[in-house]
Amino acid sequence: MAKNKAAVLKAPKVTWKQDFRRNWPVYCMFIPAVVFMIVLHFIPMFGIVMAFQNFSISKGYFGSEFVGLKNFVDLFTGDQFPIALRNTICIALLKNTLGFIPPIIFALLLSMIENKRFKRICQTMSYLPNFVAAVVVASLVQEFLDQDGPLTMLLTNVFGLENQNWLANNHIPIFWIIYILMGVWQGIGWGSIMYVAAISTVSGDLHEAAAIDGANRWQRLTKITLPCIMPTIMMMFVLGVGLSFSTGYDSIILLYMPSTYNVADTVYTYTYRTAFGAATNYSLSAASGLFQSVVGTVLLIGSNWISRKTTESSLF
Amino acid sequence: MSVISRKKKVRTPAEEETSLNMVEHKSVVDHIADVIIYVIVALIAFVCVIPMWHVLMISLSDGRAAMAYEGLAWKWIGNFNLGGYELIFQDSSIISGYANTLIYTIGATAIGFILSAVTGYALSRETKLKTPVSLILMATMLFSGGMVPTYMVIKALGWVGTRWALLIPGCTNAMFMIMMMNAFNSVPKEMYEAARIDGAGHLRTMWQVMLPQAMNLGFVIILNSVVGQWNSWLPASIYVTNKKDLWPLQLWIRQITADSENFLRSSNPDYNRYLIEYAVIVAATLPILLAFPFFQNKLEKGVIAGGVKG
Image (cartoon, rainbow over all chains, first blue to last red; front, side, top):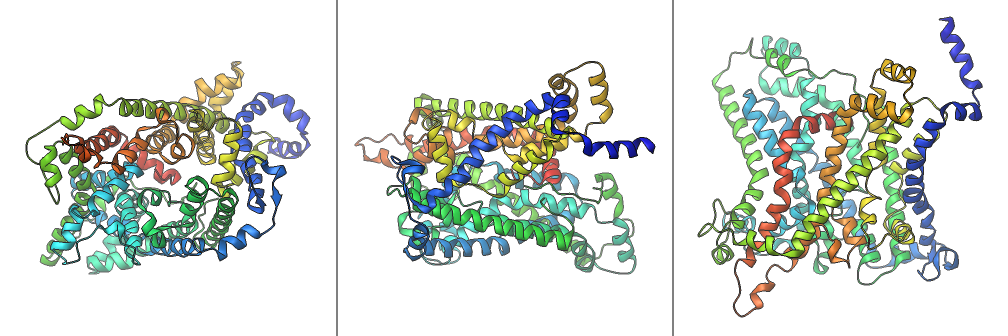
């Protein structure tokens, strides 16, 4: 006890110099990571001044003319960015509703399967799409939804929809639904892992007691399992919302085409295209990227805060 | 993507097994419900693999017949034919794509793992630098400079158009470092103290004593990194667009998919060329898909422990 107290009292007294003398090898071990983070993550953060400049590569950060918020005015009054923003919001909303539920349902269904081997095989199969590369997934989507693709055939022959290349359809909300369903296909198995783990923590005694009292399966599902995994669901939902604005749009670059920009363009793809596409405008791209980073960070911090308030678990 | 603290303990499968069934007397309705559930789950699992099956079967088909075929390929169309694979293994660009992907995957994973292990170890020691460095890491997780400013930095480093752009910037991230810190923190303190008393330096203690104990989580990081690097395409499309000899396999797939029907323009088309797109997808995806089931348990644990998205 006395020893502990001494330690507590001693701790604040260590100066940087003493600490360094004692632990200098550890200090050295920090160097690579700190250099890595500063060069590749922090300097770019300062590089966003170009969003407020009329940036040209030849003049650099210090020579380019400072134009204040002009780039942002250009963004929001232009004809492409507002549409990209609308698409991003709509896709994010769909992702957090339509795209959020399937893994939960899949996990609940899995939990009701008693045959262990069958359950394991199904899980393994459902995980596979998560390991397929984005490029391959995109070409699968193109292949299946092409004019003579298997899915198009199914939609035409069974549901009587017009035969077409569905990816070239630029009517709302065809592309959004394709994109969400692609995400569901990729993530239904992998996304269910958290829920399966949560369901396995639900006490079996509760189920037994309820079964003795005559609760049927549906009642046990809605009155026991669901409430028990609600914290996990809430947490995943809140984190999903936090990440939904800034991550997961890169595969749109592989799927969209100029004729579908009006439904498929998002802030992310707009940023990419304006920087590395045919008509390059670095300042505009940096402004759009900054807008995305800021909204993404605000969403992440906000949703994390809500998560901590409501479910006691949080990202950081 | 999170370090989630969970209080409840995960029940082992054995416990799960004994929990139900004891008091349950299944009615007819229950049995019908059972059948429906089995069918739905099987259907979902089936839908998850069938697109890959389709591609595999087309890649083994007769080129001309496959081109004319519409709908899902349950088995190869026409005669069994390995012509597509012969073509891709004669194609020097695809071979070099394969080699590049291997270089990027192994290189970036190795560099990234060493960096995260060293940093994770340093973070798990009690020094005054711990808090400031954690804050730096946290900041990079929350906010990013964005695509263009990052591109400018890498351009200034002279890495655009070189392998370095694909080996270094994406090799690790703050989350992997924090996961390694947790891994080292979970090693019993006595191990560390014993090694230090025996006179081992920090590097030696970390590498020979602590790391073997921390490898459970370390392995998860390596697996995630390998899958991520193997499947990555965006950095390559930004940094080495004009250098085709540096392209990873994924960019070649993208290219081949884009001009898959160009071969028809020649007067005497080789229909096996239609199969290239499919063969190359199989060649790029099969290694990962075949290896994955062996690591399934580890990867699953990684998701539960760290919420890592693969």
